[in-house]
Image (cartoon, rainbow, N blue to C red; front, side, top):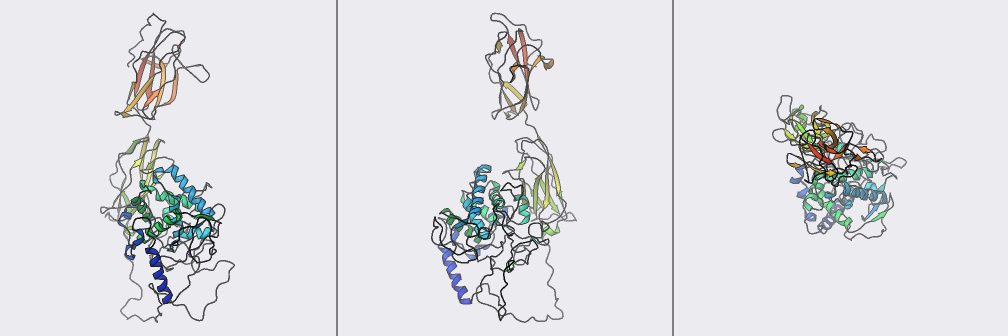
Length: 584
């Protein structure tokens, strides 16, 4: 979760109890629309079943800010409120650069994935909950946060256990991962979900344009339609798998849908309540300039300690008095028991699980899917292990839904099956690499091949005779239809040549011809392609002064061939027969 924006003031038991009642009342009054999201109980904080099929979690289920939107609907014009360091009532204003990033991401997704129907208000709701809109808009002109935003290290101490996956490149921690940036991506998710939203050639999780676009693509995967409540719920739960998180984001989404306004960067209102109540905060990160709970910004004066040490709050209010440590009995081990290994820890290698040959024509779906089995050193299957499939190299082949990365958990047989591959237009070899998420094990590469579009049959769409007087123009243009295994063959490359004879496919030097851009005779046309209906209509044909019967041969990728007879003769005369059967 994002770094806290200042140490919370500790309050007495009575104050805490009153605040808890107020928050509960506010929560119960703000259910969005007609659904029951606002009326979930604390028991609903467990992961939702439908989220289990998603690709893990964008945030690693990190803590988030729990401040609720005001009861009053947003004011369309700015209202007076606290400054960046205040902790007063939240309001609808969104910092200018942050708001611009959300709207640009919505526009980009409308073009890239129109069926997703992503509203920018959803990005604003998540950004509010994750980082308080990039700490109230503490960003530079290019959208990069003035200081990195880091959540607590995910060391299993009150949080998920996610060991380092980026060598500390993003979070400054080479032991455990932390969520990073205004949209709080964990490094392993950013590695495949990251986007360059401000076109500076970099994918930076601490840049609001990059992070907002990445969040949009993340929420739009799996062919989800966010205008449908079921898909919207799934997408939000895949960001942080908690019903409480879903409820809170839905409240902010409905709040921003009613209206908002732009405020200057750096003047947004900051939240001060966190889902973990500030527990388990990370130690000072090694990333230069990062802000972490409990640290003093450079140039400021550290507060003087009080006369007595602060007593920790109980989760439900009140305080506890620390007890002196006791000496364990002689037969009690002084160190805690070793943590049992996770399924991921037991994986030694990945094996192919009978994938077979992967070949598809450009634009088609592969008829086989990649299957990978996670095994121990002894060859035993390992279930519940996340396997990441990544399409590498210069290719436009993707998984279903347009993504180049997919993460799938192994089943009870230790097998993870990747989504179906969709061949792009670039032909040649494609590599798909399978790796174990959370482990630095060698990957397993799968080779796939994309072949060019092909046709196996060509027919004319009309049967009118193709005749012309010497020196004239043929009245009808030649049009053919291409098919492959009986289906329309669209986008298939073709060549048309006026040949010397059925037995000699070289271009003729006399007789009918096409006209080039310069008006000169052309007897071979290349670079032709069938249209979406498999049709190919050739340019107009002309005749020189040579009378006779001539042949036009059309060939396509895949070997389909059609030979068409052309007749050049003066009216009332018959042309000599062609030198061979034109149907060859």
